[in-house]
Length: 490
Image (cartoon, rainbow, N blue to C red; front, side):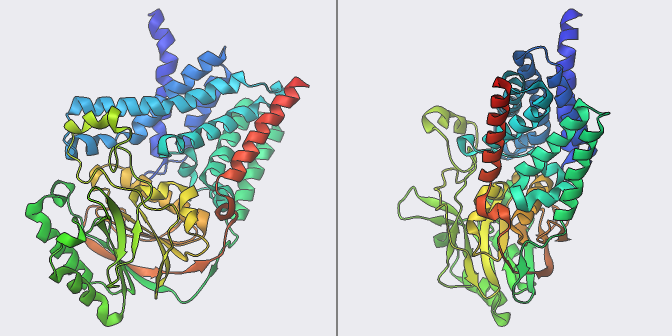
């Protein structure tokens, strides 16, 4: 019984961490994130020692990440062929690794020097700094950053063009900390009200401006099951499916998903590229699609996007690859895992960090592939040249989960940060047109084959976040910690 009493607070914290998943897309139950962070804040503030605060942060993080990334199990087990116990253990290990970051935040909150009257600033600051670290270390995995839960639905989304998702997250955590610490302190409530009111005002500003006329776009969703996508027996069926859909499009910019052609261009039947071009040629439309591309050497190949309507086939090569899915980190340590998985083309090469947008009649189009648009600091590399962003994805790996909806919410934040339209063409969803305010202008139902027809607007200009990315916020938060430490010493 005594052990259970000691364990109960940690179980409750894990539960409060887990309910955060409902605050993200597709449910958008935003107050649950506030409740989740309030529980963490209260627990850490009441911790008797930095070590206890660290363990409480870990318990919260374990529940948080198990709930928010559980869908990786589908890719490992259902489509990757990994035995279920091994896949479940892998998810637990990954969640435990990610829980180390809120654990570090909890430990630092009580360990760092700070005047007692200003300690309310510590947890929001170190929590967001460790969240950024999670999104950078070992190539980064910034999924489920708390700021996404408020974008684009709340006034805090107005801060995205200023400091990106991490500024949104810091202001959210600060608001919660002020309320939890001194709920009857009118000054604290006044600060919170000012933060949220200012966010609403910022969201009314136009950070970029229109250029040219609206462009008619056609986003194609093929709904090819992951179970057959790489099966040679269904290869021609997949090609014909995308050809038939392309022939039905009406836009000036037509976009097909990531690896819409599931083979190297040299293996594609000779008649196929020309038939795709013929499908859009009468209206002189631009046709963009995803395809693997061979490099100069035998073991060099890329996850790429090309402009199929241009016989020169200009390319964008994916530069931020998914660990274990698209490349093997530390092969000497992890290569054994692939004895239990069947991952096609899991040894992709990286493209260049800076790649020029496609210069097309429909605009300066900057492509990114799947997971890349969860990294705001990398998407801004295409600015100021890019006038529109496109994301090509295949989330059939996680079919039936909320991963696609969560990914689309991150795309909404990228649109806010850059002041650009984001066009999402996906295999199974979420295929969508997102405007510069992060609003859906059109969405196809998930797991259906179809074409999303609509209009998009090219835009120019540089919001503040596009100039400096995350660095101004990181410097400011670092300076805040240094200042708090110096005040404590004095």
